Image (cartoon, rainbow, N blue to C red; front, side):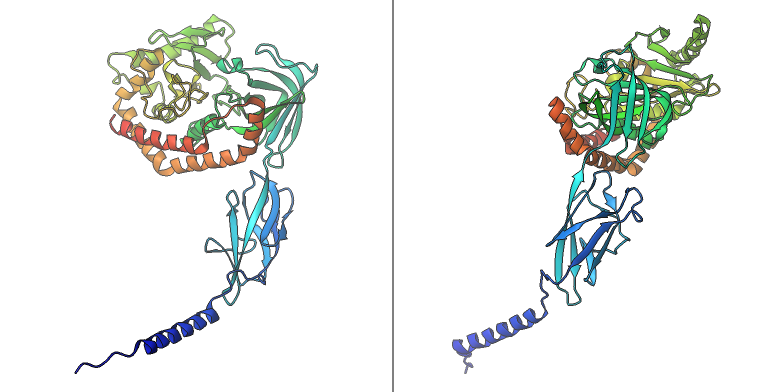
Length: 492
């Protein structure tokens, strides 16, 4: 005989009793998720822990928000705080007052926890002061700078905004650039009366302000220079983002950088060294069309006293060119004349940034110490890179070969290096190393630079009404370009 199951009323009563017991037990042990007795009592960025600060920055605390104001380039900081919590965390990671460095560019939530396990969250709210280092020029006459040939005298103040030392100096100023001088937002050259250290860069007289009118990201020249630095290319410039005012007129966001010139703190090739520029803007006194490839070569240094001195330099370059143009290339010992690693890295920079001006060529520098080989560089001028050439739109394409199929003079010269197994092997080695050890650092640099200039970029837009692709587009383009390059280089 089958045993009868318990009646339904008894079953429901039993189940209800179990649930009630469990609920009471859970309520006894579940901590308060917003315990108002937990308090941040103070929150400070102390100069002693953050030497880049000018003074302590004390935050105010209201309800569950911690408010403060700091400059945008001071974002990796060590906070000092007091609290009645037994544990303080960010994203599950324990935080110790005066010890942990925190990146405050993104929203930061501190979680305070009591001994019983109850918690309270505090949001750090920062009002970013986005003012960059300032370059303020005043011409003595009050006249505008309208010429690339004629300097105007005046004074200039470099205001470091606590990141750099301030400097006030006298000097003279003029326009600069070729294509860029014809654009609405002008680039300028500064020649100080004496050698000065400007914004942490080594002391010299000559400085450049790049306008970046075509570049809506205000990043591209800086990104190219960073690639050169990561590849340890000698004499690569540093780009300092600044805001420029001339005669009380605000002109927006610029890059301050070194003049490309032979000096101890610039292209240091000694007094008997050489600096050449291959450039189709063929408009200077000491220049020649080379014998082998008809390259437009301008002698930037030295400035010869007569034709004899000029001919000495011309003969040296054409001796290099002759062994590259030879039908026996690469079996011509041409690497006795030019540094192989500089060739590989130079092509990598131009390929990664898709700077097709190497084909013309334009702004293509080559230097040589008196007792050394020719060396490619320093790199310069990436306004028309990143897919711009031929499209007038940055990031329009990422899979374009760096060298043209047409017989352009620069193409004939530089593409010939890819016929040498030694150069191809160096390119593979250097590119593989860059991808593994430097590419992510480059992307981090882009994020950092973009964050620092955001406020100034918005102010620049108010003046020039020029905008462009965002940082995400640039980084995606570089990712795609790097993938394309890997395939290209591996198939050389």
